[in-house]
Image (tube, rainbow, N blue to C red; front, top):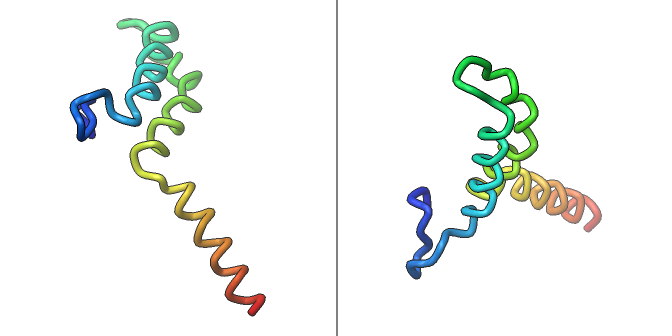
Length: 71
């Protein structure tokens, strides 16, 4: 959940990824210089993947298509 709390009241499944992303921003950016955001791109991708599963779904669709063509 985007609030940081899971369905059962504990931390959400993506909370560790959010913490990693936030820590990266804190270490690599400042109020005067935001160029360090580029260093955080892998952490941002991990967080988005956790939230939306786009890469996982795309990979599963490719596997499904390959299996369909083999039959």
